Length: 152
Image (cartoon, rainbow, N blue to C red; front, side, top):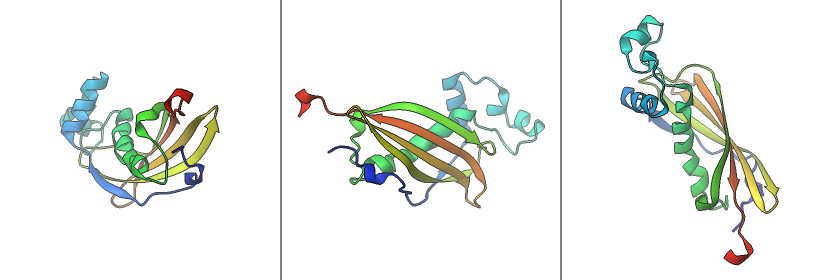
């Protein structure tokens, strides 16, 4: 089944919570080489005016990928995850993701373009706290490779 272009404009029900923890922030910071102690030291974070340690800016991809499963699991999407290549990722941060935040997400499919036998699917995930305070808007473009003649 090919990607269904009719999913463009779809919004999925809010999901969550994803609890941002100090341990996850520290693991991610180490993995990406983010050495600023604001990511691992509560004392440094508080000295800089934060309630707790804050996540590196690209940490939002962890939550975005977590909620992306909603789209891949939707049988109406026609997306075969084994054919997905991550094409682009952008973030607009409204406030830092902070340890202790309970993040709720709303996934939107903004665009589906069919290009040369492949599909380009652009999603937007809004990340917000339980009280609705926005934290980040994550925009992803996925390339879903089409089938080769020999695969049919």
